[in-house]
Amino acid sequence: MTMTGRLQTEAKAINRFKQLSETADRPNGSAIFVRTDVYEGQIHGWLEMPSFAIDANTRTKAFSDAIAFLKDVHQAYGFMVK
Image 1 (tube, rainbow, N blue to C red):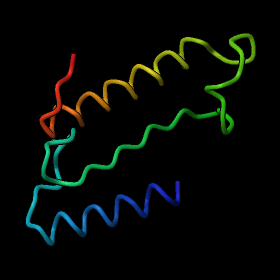
Image 2 (image 1 turned 180 degrees about the vertical axis):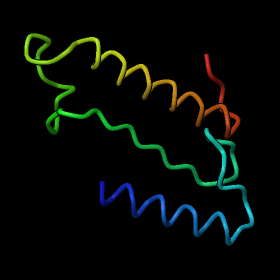
Image 3 (image 1 turned 120 degrees about the vertical axis):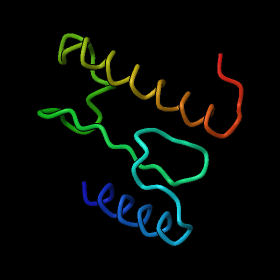
Image 4 (image 1 turned 135 degrees about the horizontal axis):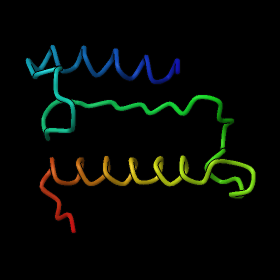
């Protein structure tokens, strides 16, 4: 969380310096965008644990969210998304 806070602070400073919007809710291809997803009650590396030890639906949601974010980034910067 400390690293996330630092990245968000630096992104806001850079966006202000470049006079870019800080209010985007997804990558837009110009402003620096930092996204953090927190899954309460999970331990470091929980996504790699066997399904019997964790909630597999939560893992599926985490991976789906990550893939959607990467697609948004690629689309914002003009890469093809299928």
